[in-house]
Amino acid sequence: MRKFLFIGFLFFPATLWAHGFGGSGFLHPLTGIDHIIAMVAVGAWSAQLGGKAIYRVPASFLAMMCLGGVVGIQKIPVAYTELSIALSVLLLGLAIAINKKIAWLIAAVAVGLFGFYHGYSHGAEIPNQHKVAEYIVGFLLTTLGLHIAGAVAGLLLLEEKNGEAILRIAGGLGAATGVFLFLKLLI
Image (cartoon, rainbow, N blue to C red; front, top):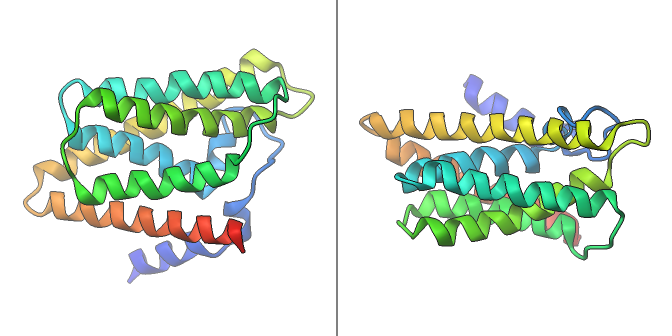
């Protein structure tokens, strides 16, 4: 019952859906459930893929996130940022739910594109009083931590008897959240 209450809590409080938080780069990835789910999902999906994907897929996300952050800080317009972030939550959740093995390079390119949009969002919302390099390092480190948390959780689940099914269900819940976010932006 506690798990269901916790899940319900995640879906309804407006503060969890907020962006534009004036905190440090370390905190920014934690200010929206869309960022949290996507970043944890990158780690979990990399665990599912296994092999070199376990570090190359999250590394691609981080590299492109850094680039996106720089573009956002420069205030260069990028269209459909929030829609792309919602789509990243949906597609990463689906990838986990479907659990189809693909080449790590394809996965890295896909998450790299998602990482760019997440980074752009972080960079575009940098508070004026923050130093750019420190802010970028902050959101990259927090993102790395979320990737590691997702990968560790994924690896631990995959060792359990019903762990693969649980991970796939979690992916489905992530995809459902992505649909909700996508529709929320369209309505």
